[in-house]
Image (cartoon, rainbow, N blue to C red; front, side, top):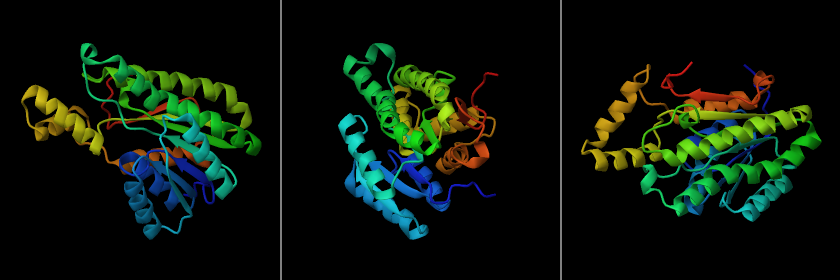
Length: 262
């Protein structure tokens, strides 16, 4: 199936590993020109090299702190200088730490808001004018199943990710007239380094092994396994494609059926 993405410019944040990396590679496989960013220069360079060896993609890889609005502005400007525009923007950032409410400091709250909410605001402000000029654009946020179903010990994610959904819906309503589609993807328990960190924290708190944590998460989903980052990435690429041209303002869960609501 032709997704209509060849030569589109796709910007993917926090794309040196995990779901972000899988997403960047999936866009490269579709023939997109690719802008990647991350915090660690060496890890990012390695990720970009891996993709370039597998796919004949033009790649820009820049270190960028997504919590710094000036850094985001510079990264988007560099992307536009190199590629001429930004067609697709996928916002992503590492999840906040696993803590219960009374253990969360005000500094934790500020960091979570900066990384997991305001980073999306910063990117949206920078890319929307380019998308408006082209009368075509896709903004896709990566959040979590916590936008639909709170997860124990993840009060920061439960609260802050919901704000992203409100932003997604607002942007979809305001900029649909400009040909810009805005959607959110909520992964369930997916085999990433982030999940390993969560397993370690829960293991220390419960006395159960990390393997038992992974097994319990897998058992809770109807598919009885963890997700693969590529499965999330493929959903994101579909949302960015011409095949999803009448889908906007939505949160799509890639969770193996873990969400228990209707």
